[in-house]
Image (tube, rainbow, N blue to C red; front, side, top):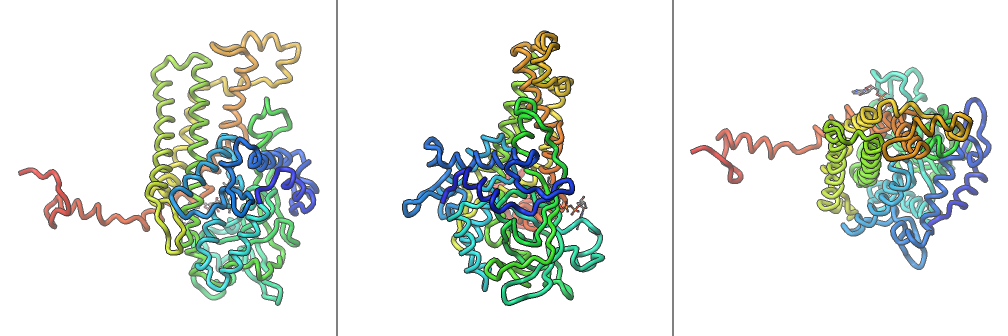
Amino acid sequence: MARTGKAYLEALRNRPPNLWYKGQRVEDPTTHPVFRGITHTLARLYDLQHDPKYRDQLTYQENGARYPMSLLPARSKEDLARRSQAYKLWADTHLGMMGRSPDYLNAVLMAYEQSADFFGPYAENVRRYVQYVREEDLCTTHCLTNPQVNRAKSTLEQPDPYIPLGVVRETSEGIVVRGARMLSTLPTADELLVFPSTLLKEGPGADKYAVAFAIPTHTPGLYFISREGLAQEGSPYDYPLSSQLEEMDCLTVFDDVLVPWERVFIYKDLARCNSAYAETGALMHMAHQVVVLKTAKTEAFLGLVALLAETIGAEVYPHVQEKIAEVIVYLEAMRGFWARAEMEAQPNAYGLVCPSRAALDGARNLYPRLYPRIHEIVQQIAASGLITLPSEADLASPVGPYLEKFLQSATLPAKERVQLFRLAWDMTLSGFGARQVLYERFFFGDPVRMYQTLYSVYDKEPYKERIRAFLGWQPQPEPALVAD
Ligand SMILES: Cc1cc2nc3c(=O)[nH]c(=O)nc-3n(C[C@H](O)[C@H](O)[C@H](O)COP(=O)(O)OP(=O)(O)OC[C@H]3O[C@@H](n4cnc5c(N)ncnc54)[C@H](O)[C@@H]3O)c2cc1C
């Protein structure tokens, strides 16, 4: 049932993940200076589910209880629309800057549940697990790629067979896994989903890597070793995003972790591992959440660049208008992908209604390429305003009157103008902003291999036929403009 922020924080306090930061165990992420911000932001997202103003958009009702909308089974296009409106509401609250709000992986879990027969002997495990996540409204994170030791070699050829995550042995209770995964964002989740993402190749011993499972983040033997925080201690005025939205990223180590049988979803099955995302519809549902999130993010950037330009009077210049128009074009492109994805939705083999993969492939392959350009536009418009940024304390200090005078702008007094530019800085230039570019480039996978996959799955034949017909090599399939 839709949980409250308090319930999330209490669960985290009572069963913290084995999280390490700068050589020390984080005993309570809800009060730790680096993790506190994101845990309380997550709590606020959960609380919105209970706000009478947003409840009906963020949750659905079943047997008198309310559940998160992101777990609503997609059985029609109307369901897809309800799902995306819920994604959008949450995304707008954080300007699209949070990649691991719980709806992201809920989209995957809903698809797995509705396509559970795909998992063969483990189908019931998947159904029971997703039902459990739904009842408790849990927050999940995931880790997909193996450590970046030697990318010229396959998983089977690494210096130690248990650098990549693999099964060491079976017991009556479950499987024991060892190794590591390169990255989990949001270690302050309740549960960790472990699935392969890159294609597993056949070979002697390869099946030990062909597993999928879910475990609580506090499972014995599981370690989250965090990167350094990018946010500095300070007020939301000084650090409007990083003080609240530092999700954090961790190397995830499995030191002989026991995964109970009931938590195993795929075991020693390369074919299922390699096709799970596409066949179950998880890929399309994940990408559906993502296109909504990126629309929200682009809307936020449009608002930002328009305000920046207006604030310092730069909007009078045609090249500045052109740059803002460029962001408008990107926004409308994302809206177009989103709308078409829902319009052309089709049921998959299990009856789950999936948004159009072609439209979503367009969105998820384009955004990593256009996002750095949006950052560039912010820098080109804001210029030195992005860096001449005193703090809230400076404004209240004896040098405050100088700031009032010299940092006023065409439309705003110094306090608001600095606040706006600090937001622009946190969106693009701070450590938090810089990570956003890396995130957009890679979070859905390596952009190079994603293009290669698109090339191989996309049906190019009808377009080749049209050219052949135009050249007169074969009959015209449809009327075409041909010179007499
Ligand atoms: C900020 C951030 C957050 C992330 N959060 C998560 C998360 O929460 N969960 C999660 O599972 N993952 C997460 N990821 C990881 C993400 O899935 C990977 O970054 C992505 O899949 C690429 O893998 P990699 O980083 O290991 O790059 P690599 O595969 O190591 O690629 C490095 C370079 O080598 C090239 N290369 C490597 N292998 C090949 C090949 N076979 N063919 C052609 N070129 C190749 C790549 O093109 C690239 O240029 C996150 C990444 C970032 C940056």
